Image (cartoon, rainbow over all chains, first blue to last red; front, side, top):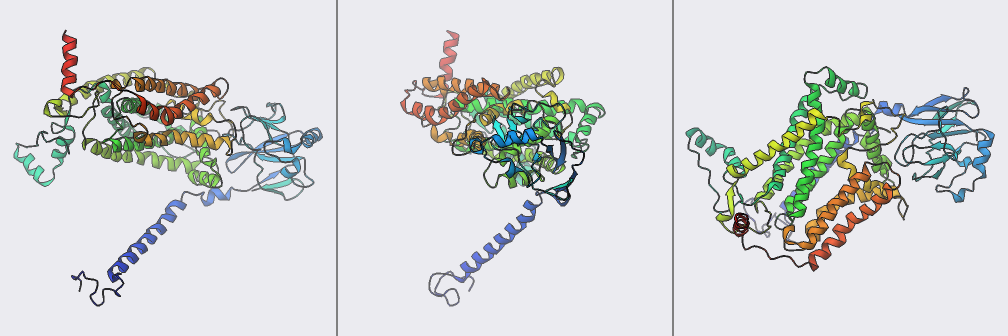
Length: 188
Length: 421
């Protein structure tokens, strides 16, 4: 039977031109294909962040030492994180701006948590090409809008870390954060 | 493959006959780069750069393998292990300088090889596949060189990795997950360094494999030549060995002379001093630049400053990759049946404009992103695309080429006669 190639041989097909052998061939190759694709999954997934990298994906910061007008740089997910204690003047400067006039319209409220408007927590990563903006450290220039200034390509951010001038497309990213107490914040 | 008059491999020694009948490897070499491969008799020195590219790859693989014996791909010690190579390992300084400058010289000869192909129409039928495979090699080279530059884990390594993987982050929706996946974290770190080292070791061998395909595809129609006309008979060719092995050997000597001059007298001239500062994720260098061989593409990337439907950053990424993808369509954009630029008066002028344009892009790519460089790179990037998408298709239809010689031999003898007269 194996040597016969005619379709009308009993057992080779149902007379509709489909041979049993074709079915077995397609089924076997498809199954092998699905198997091969399944094997690819761990080979691709191994490149995603490993458990020890993810374990550092959230941090707690004590804010009690940060005075009004000061800012600290810390590290969150291997990238700089800016925590800034805004002054009243900085808050009102940020509130005065009409959000609709901005490239990435957001108010200071939307970028902070309720009742803790003075705590501006953002990534220290310029949204243009990933440089670290200046303005968080003591004595660093803050740019013409009093927030942050990226020395790479001249992006200026205001006191709500919103992009005001320069090539960066969006505001400095605000990570997920929550206050655990009045002085401790968990980021991530 | 090859022409009917190609010499046949006929081993005389019984041992060679014994090998040939069991594993015809010497025969393969004889037919590929020996007397069994007939080559047009009129090749000029621009035809050296294929062999020189192969030599550069060999230098990179040999120096790279020995450097890997001393290098440690771990974020904590990578920078120190490179300094260890420079200061403590016997001849380590020379091997590392040879590898770093070898990358630059690899790109120099490959760029000349590509522009040779552009001028003499080497991408045209029946050699389209040779051109396409060459572009694949070029892309692999760029990936390899980028990852290699990350390995010393200096400031430029780190921030270069951040900026280049950030390009993928510009893609809508899938961008950030892809960037995180490529890096194995949220910023370049140990995971990224390790995988870059693994791939940096792998890709040169992939390149070597594609080079075999590139040469295989070349040997179907045989080499092109400066007149661009087809070989018509045995009088038009000479055997590759000894004629072009000798000519390539001379070119190789000149190449090695220039390479050694830079390697021994100006080893850091093509590098960036900031890469001798260990990577610091909290401090950005004032001016991030890639290696010089990426400058034209970096200029195109940064040329987009205005959002238009898509964000400017994404346009830059699309344009940068597009500038290379475009070259894959070149055989079908240039419809002129005449291959060689020597017989195409209008094409020739635009070719040199393109060369100048790419040099201007390179100059802008290495400069800070401020005026007037931004404006100049915008104009130069626009011209680059216009050359391939507008000028070349129009020129290839409108142009009236000069009369072609009847044969390669006629062209050679005419030139020889003029020189004697």
